Picture 1 (cartoon, helix red, strand yellow):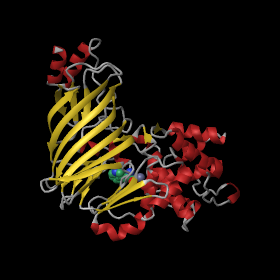
Picture 2: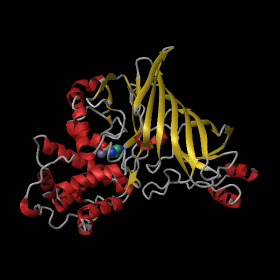
Picture 3: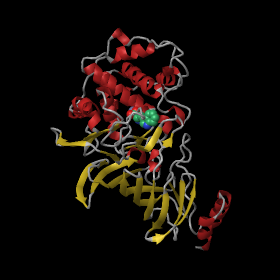
Picture 4: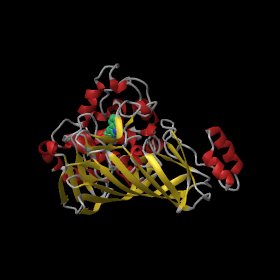
Length: 478
Ligand code: TRP
Ligand code: ZN
């Protein structure tokens, strides 16, 4: 016990490591500070799994003050003497583990928690973190802002990919760790707070409104949201009975309406291609945030910086299967998210009077060797600064078009469905995808992936026609 107290108070990381070593055998060792991602080595902690987050938040738009209480139900995946949560900024006033005060040490964005009693492997334990402060968004390696992004008018755009979840709640901040969530947010009357999943309740008292959201299916921390605005809200149901909750900034309402009206059709169309929609709620959060230039596939309810066009709606909805239900094990595999969502745009356009996928492919293939699309191989962005550059999107989609030509439509669409089904609510990696493609097609596809996914620069014959010269068309396979 004394050893662990000392550990918590250890002044330097070196001392902490030495003391942790000393405690080995009787009280576990610290969870690795970082889930092991080469692009974001600090993110997450490999020593425990969060089963459920209960986030109870209050936000005051006028002062930007966020007051939070996080209750994490976790399982130790090793004997644990201490573990890390990721939290950027904000003031922590109290941390308990299983009801007892825990020692806390903060270094950068790591919040090291040393429980009074060590946690044996397999133990389920409860952590509470009381915190408050004015959240500050993260500047990603690519200079984009993410996390809790407050606007001058008091509204908040909350989008955590890849790192920003830690700007508003303590988490095991890596997509390897997926959890159920309850997100309850209290805001002044007149404001609406929108989270993921189903709205369980909405109450008002004493001039404040409380919104309780429940996400039952496993969700990566970066996909959590608690967007705040003076939204126009519409609650409807799709023909299949799926609840749809749309929250739209009034300034974007006119532009958003015709696009959001298509969401049920987009969900039905994508379900016919990829299998049943993975979540029990849907919808959109449409804000008016000119300083952010991206949308995010926040689970079950994407968040848009402005009214989306139909391609963006199709893209973020496709991520519900590819990215949200089937999650990355490593950020290096970002093409499994972005290439698939981009190819879904191509499929939608092909099926709705636009150019065919072969034509889209040819347009990119015609770009000169110096174009951004060839800047790096989509399967190997190199670092966290290039996740959202052109190659994982457009050239990632080109990989799928090449795959489709190589294996034919029935096998190709069967692969997409199997990928979504076999890894539903879990994870997938590129090696697993390649293996599935080879098994289903009975073909050696190493050359195709070596050229299109991993080859440096523009491939030699990017415009090579499909076998037999046929122009692929979209087919739905039930
Ligand atoms: N994943 C988002 C999409 O393609 C894009 C995105 C999320 C992004 N976070 C970002 C782009 C940060 C640039 C910077 O729908
Ligand atoms: Zn995307």
